[in-house]
Image (cartoon, rainbow, N blue to C red; front, top):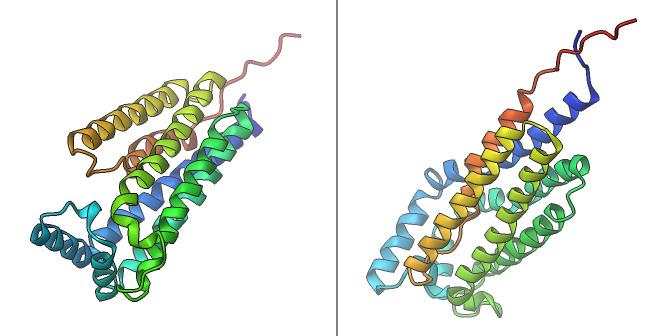
Length: 229
């Protein structure tokens, strides 16, 4: 007979959380290559014209480009949702594993990310009268995005490794954790190699979230032999 399982239902619940988290990055990527494509092109043109890295363009320039391309606000919704759904997924996993680090790291990463997004909302003001800190986005973008990405990725690695230790799809959990670590290292190499112009990026979590989510959602009930009388 099969082991029914609250355990199996819990696995699917945790897995669906990671799939929802991955879906926010898929949504962002789709929007970035559709509605926000002109915005990204304008950023690249401005960077080339001023010989300035995209992530270090003056806030006044960012404000003008953002106001010229209002559709960018749609993709911003995905960026706001991503940390919230990620925290939900991590909390579901931690409720099973008892992991003490994943949830605090997820919340810290989300807080830094939302602070960064709050500064970006200031770009809706007059380019010549931007709010404090928003006008410093040229120096704050890389460190804020990098710190948020680091915290969120470490949170995922901790959660995935704890699931492995719990025995929930241990191979898939280990693979997801190691891929997240490898992508974090690769992103860090890019950060250093660019001279600090390119931040660590949280979207690298898309592949490991998909791997872990699919593995857990497709878990099957274990066969249990009937007890011998």
